[in-house]
Length: 195
Image 1 (cartoon, rainbow, N blue to C red):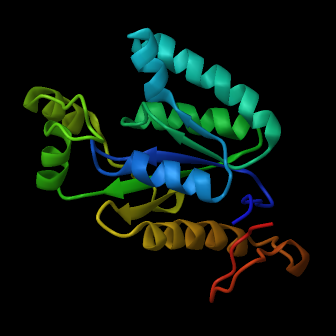
Image 2: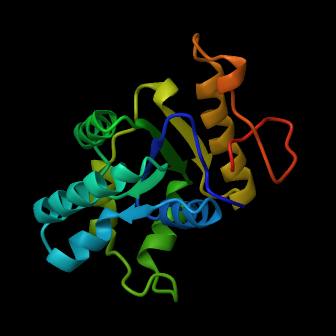
Image 3: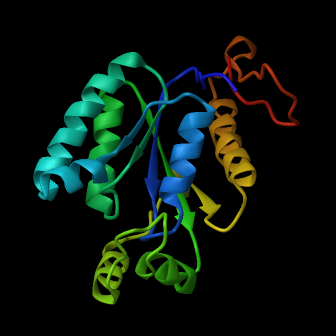
């Protein structure tokens, strides 16, 4: 697939509990559509300080916003205040935020987070997992987020997100036929915007 081009660029913000599948989806979606992907957790690992990491992530977002490409963002979005801040930043740059909430059974996420594997070389302790789980507050506005299952295939997850992006475009009262979503390079019952 080629890059995802929307009439208005979006900031796709990954949210969900620990080990729900946010990173797996985000990296694949960004790779599929050649979208910039910013993982703020990497700044936190590098600096060891959440405040500094968030400042670096926002500085990087300021630069990436100049591309006017849809961006995938992950990290430090567990609370309503954090999501409000990232949405405000997106809108200041002419982006539409869309929160992608990855939901997975808590027993499965606990097993994923606390077990050492090749993909998880530094597992969480039970206390860390519980703290991160309690810290997450679900979003309240259904029109501003889309829910995907952390247990579904990537193809199913991506279709759900693309459908939401399409609905946002076609539900606008001022959408015209010249401005509607279109698909190139593949067939789909619902159009997606790829160029």
